Length: 269
Image 1 (cartoon, rainbow, N blue to C red):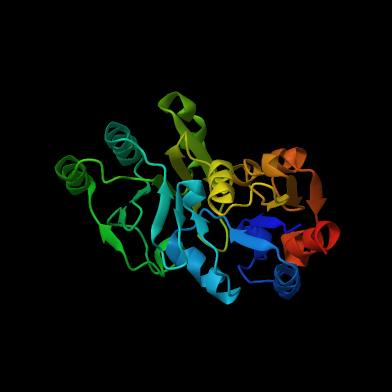
Image 2: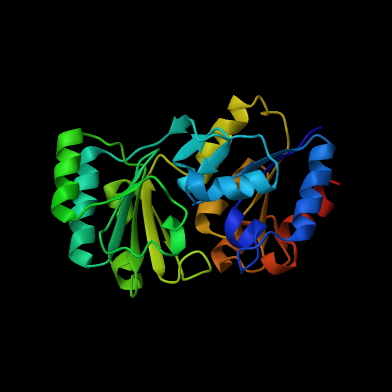
């Protein structure tokens, strides 16, 4: 029976330096040769995810922006979960008060704080973005209705207090927090619709691909990844957050040491 392998990218498939680990690539190739279907599921946008997708020579849809969006290998939207117009305005006001650097992403475009450093981090390779200050962004939302926004993010130093000081679930939003990493050297947080998750997206895609009877291996290091674990065998690398490892069925070696390859060798090959 063919496996469905759904894996996070950063700090799971890639090592801590943001590099593809050779043994992971080799194991994925062997699994695909035996009929496994491999899907990437990431907090990255399509632009960032497509780089890894192409390196792995995959032809499957991609789950991006923490499960808010599923796209074809060419970036065409297949499925989306969005944030309402009123909530987008509320978040813009909150973000503006924080004096950090915000980003509001639609399925095809990003609207970012005018002082955001785009020479590195999540927008260094992004072509489809527009820099708007608070007033211009607010006017854009009002004039264009529901953009629609799939992800609202905030970047900067000292975000932990802002992130922890609010119960985001009361806004019907699903939060996630990211410490500094190779991808961006400041703290970051993201908010998506409470209906959106990597787990819901993976389940939707499993049905879309006609793989409901296939066993699933889901891999990842963050709470967003843990939402996929209930689909089958949940695997967390050793570097995952403690609460993620507690939810996993198996803890693989550190992402620097071929976590994905170890899981494939244990459960698939």
